[in-house]
Amino acid sequence: MVSKALTVSFQGIEPLKVTVEVHFSAGLPSFKIVGLPDKAVTESGERVRAALHSLGAILPGKRVTVNLSPADVVKEGAHFDLPIAMALLGALNMVPAQELSNYVFMGELGLDGRLIPTSGILPASMAATQWSLGFVCPEEQGAEALWSGNPSILAASSLVALMNHFSGDTVIAPPEPKPRPAPTSPLDLKDVRGQDTAKRALEIAAAGGHNFLMIGPPGSGKSMLASRMVGILPPMTASEILEVSTIYSVAGLIKDGTLMSIRPFRSPHHSASMPALIGGGTKALPGDVSLAHNGVLFLDELPEFSKQALEALRQPLETGEVSISRVNGHVTYPARFQLIAAMNPCRCGYAGMPGLQCSKAPRCAEEYQNKISGPLYDRIDLCVSVPPVLPTDLLKKPEGESSSQVAARVQAAMERAAERYKDLKIYKNAQASGSLLEKICPLSPAAAALLEKSIETLGLSARSYHRVLRVARTIADLAQSEQIKDEYILEALSFRHHRKVS
Image 1 (cartoon, rainbow, N blue to C red):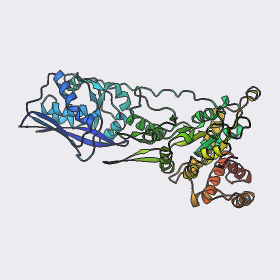
Image 2: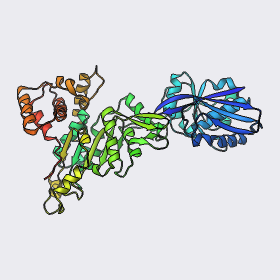
Image 3: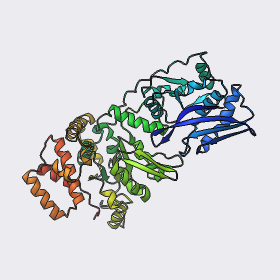
Image 4: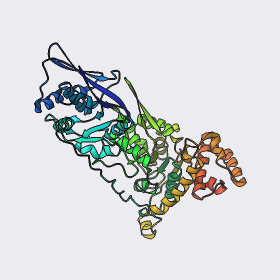
């Protein structure tokens, strides 16, 4: 007789149905797990043995084979403990084997039989709902599983509770839903004194989804500006909340069964490795680019990141997803984020400031900024110089606009763009290119003449030309104008990046 239980294996954030089969056969007593298990799954045998022993269930002195099907997919994670244990209990006739086929099981086991939380509960429960199956998980994660809308969720504290439930002796109470926490008040833009040009660029970047680079000396307010980007972006939609929460669930970062309520803001240190930034490692977990999905990725001191990590950013910036190649296949995670980067003008940080710059200026600034490759610069639409703010300016300057005031304009501009792209596969101005970009950017006669002259005098490449048009389109949307005027072109040109600093 073969007893079966169902669980999942993750390919990125996509759950794949896995059947756990248990078979007892004659031969020397042994316990073998097959089907490409990783180290954690292989060790499930010892955890399951101890957990069953604590219940008084003794495995027969036979050859026990546990097969994880499909056999050509690598199985990773401790969540295979529970389905293996349930399949064994079905083979021992301690639970009705036919009932097991109605549920997807996920959970790690303690040696005493208790169920321990594991990662990936939300996407697994969503998959069970699509397959018209119930879902079994640890008690602490019942509220997280409820967000999938699955009507049949069992959140159990232990194997004993599950055995009693399936035997009909007791009934596991349905998990209690937890309300989505109220969004915390984001940092307010009005706290930033001065830096009007940088704040204007931040608003344009938010409205059009443009990647944004700030160059300025230490203490000029670059990090303050970046940390306030989330506060001027519109709230996430229901589908965006579910997308982000699914990634965080796979990464094991969902806490207390509550979904993500505000847009992600990830700010990795410049010493972060490529797997930490892009994703990967032994379990191919999502990196910061995926954890920033539908939100903001802030890279401070951009040239200090490793060249390998920076060049790996080019794929997600272009496609909105990141692919991680492994020996046994490829894993793909969504990574549609907005890049906000900051850097000093040179390594010492004070290039162009008389009395403070080092003796190597201006050559040190050129060398430092040239650590960023041309293709990566090409994916940054806005660049602004952030000068130092004097203490006297902090005393004289009144408070600027609040985040809510700027957010209202950003929201209106994004709604205008969404209406424009409603029948296309793009959703922001930053994604427009080619003939589409020229079609959605009707130029006034003065704007057309100015742009033609700029191409000649500034030597704009085709890519730079499109970048200017994209930014000008966003500026026009903020002004609620369909036509691109010459002042919009001028402002867009002012945000072009010049790599050499003299």
